[in-house]
Image 1: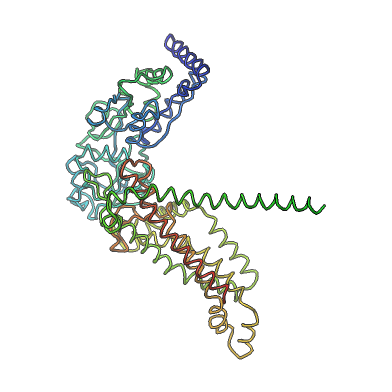
Image 2 (image 1 turned 90 degrees about the vertical axis):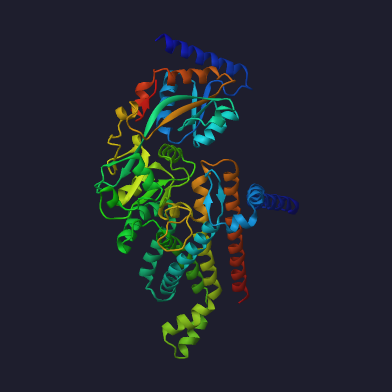
Length: 269
Length: 290
């Protein structure tokens, strides 16, 4: 309760500051920018934060992880959202990443497909074109159709990094949203694709990876291997505005874990 | 009284002039913006390598920016759509303008207008759910998202403009021509194809060019059915990416040279469309002269 009061106080302070000095347009608002994969979780967090703090304006600009990171760097937003860990070169530019949650990337196939379990190696071999037929994996004798995301997508970046297949994937289809990938896989019995675990519907089947079923528990305990962090990106040398700091604490100090979990990802703190 | 009228006239003229200039200003603004933001990447990559490079890997460790696959895909895709769409659209127009009973004509024209009003994302969605699995099963290939699917969707999408413009051209043919032909003993069918169609040929050519323009500029629908992988279009069943979709699919996540290169693609597309517009003007002028 104390925390809530103090956050409200901080918000009120920030608001009054905004009223005093018009040049500081960020006061009273939290601007986030970045990963489209984080839309669900950040949207829920922003909504509940605004509910608790009347007058705070929370915005989210879905541009993609790299765009979000450069937005923080250029001061165009308060908090950048990245669905991959920061690269060393990005950290050397004075950026700090705080893990908000972990997201599992599910390997999805058509429900008609009889393949239940794949190893990381097999997944990599499939996506680089070394394995081209489902029969090599114990499935039907038909060509594997690789469905993926467009270049620059956080999910694609996460998937290719974890499986070590950067720049080598022989995609048959490159689609621009998770929903399109799921639809395409649901339509084609030969297809395999990847999608955020939280978005997987029962029109497709998520295969086990190294014998582990993708689920919240297996992502959290680390036994499910294809997973990536959702990171809040801030600048090390510049303090956040009071409102933005309040949101940052709200999101990362465990207070909002229920909301994070309800968005289908696993809270980190 | 007269001076008052003149004042009012001048005022109205001024308002119309400004409104007209807004349109011209928008075109100028877009053209200048595209040229300014499209040139740097071409200079950095090199014009030849950009236009004739066969590999596109914009986010690879060693990025490659060759857009020949996209150019060829757009040309083939548009060509294919014209090949299917023009005969169907043209014959429909002849039927509607000359042969069809009034009631039938009304119903079909309504349907054609409706077809023109369907948003392209709906074409894409139906294509994704029905056409792509259909093509996969029909041709027994691993995946139906291909150049062929895109051509079929585009062919349907250009039908309304071809049909409507052709009807207008055919109906503008003076009735005396047809009467004369019939009076000389030609059958109605001979009259339509030997007299009406040749008389309306520049209008019909304009309809075809407009179809080309619509097909080459379409992004949303083809993005959903063409597979969108940057392959060379060396088969009808290949998963391909168009010029439009190359820009649209990567723009949201792009940065640096990749983003600039996307603007360059848009510039190339813009030049294509300018060429098509020039062709359209040429045909329309031809129609006026004849």
